Length: 253
Image (cartoon, rainbow, N blue to C red; front, side, top):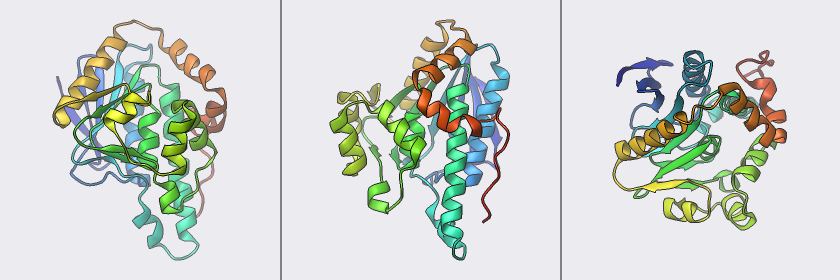
């Protein structure tokens, strides 16, 4: 295992486990998706892309502590004077849109190790990966927007529609705001596996899955193109915000 490298002001770390790049959201907090954290994750994903231009390897995203991610940083969003909250939420949405584009265009398989609660945008970030492994004993998937009074924008709706194909499960997650446990999301076909044990056990299972996928020897460019072709509407809504696209104008804060 290669020693980890901190990035984004120590908000996340990147380490190499064999052919797998493991990005870990560091600390025991809620890993709220502020612009700073989203930028740090995107930087770490870009590191993986540069290290695996031909598709050799895989990526795992994990987190320390009780939370995988508790969604957008709404405290930061509401801290500014009006109309700053709306602009700040828009800035976070734009950054997440870009991160989803980065993941779709990545030339390696991606696995989310959901080590704790994944709520709101944190749930959406997990679902943006090729596969999801979840801790069995702690944590849930929770689309909190209906409870928090936050709009679900176009690319999020499209992401959920594709990743949660069962209409009843999608209704329960999105319209009812149910907090769905690991066993239940596996039963409903939303998550690939529920893993017993602690955080490191979940990460180890995700890395094992990533190693298996990397061992298939897929052409990386073709893999990314297949994602884009499989979810063409989602890709059309995020592609202009990815790392290889021209940077869009930022909303004023």
